[in-house]
Image (cartoon, rainbow, N blue to C red; front, side):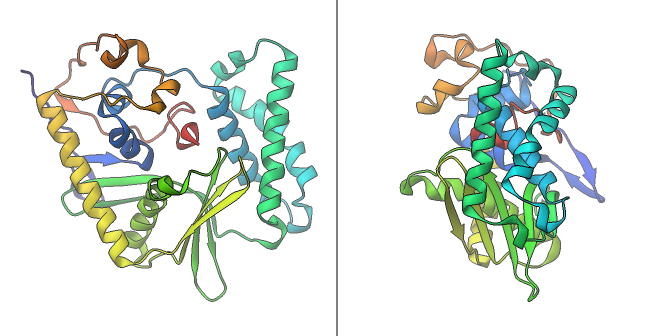
Length: 296
């Protein structure tokens, strides 16, 4: 049996054994084989209209705050969809082939405008001045695991309270799945706590698909438990790397998976592992198909 070691690098002088983002951690918890296909094999995935629309809406909401407060209107936001789409096509030329004709594209762009309308139902951006947008955060926790990701928005109140905000273009989960949805936000809160020494006051998930907001106020025990969970998760990834056993997990999410044809749960054959001696660190830059918005 071929074994693999974990690729090591240095971050700020610290020996790093591996890296995780919220989306890739979620991949492994959902299906270890999916994690392997994305991180170890790095098999390209086709962008989906839903994932690309999430990327588009996020871009508009980020850029909207460049406008003076009084001009942050729904009309302004909708007028930004076309230019944002043009920039996205330039950066990712393959997304242009998602639509068969102009009518399908127009309908899809209109759906992005509808999601922006939902955002304005949830809050008024004219009353906000975010401290950070699309903020890259990273930290190395004890044991050498690098945690990193991009936070959609950070708000800081005049009295110092910190709110971490994430936009979701899908629908809010049922109550039984709320804790799983909040895992991403606790991940960000942990990284921010470890880098700044301050625990965010409020974590806020904004679901534009059905105009709902999930809020949670973390404490130190929450974040320590999240840190323990991430260490255990990385240990499981290392075991899978050593044994070569990346077990598939069949679920309702398989309906949206690009890898069904190569998954044994669906009659497929798993391809051989890449010829490398190390388990690669997760790529720092993710494609639209790999980004957190793809699962919204």
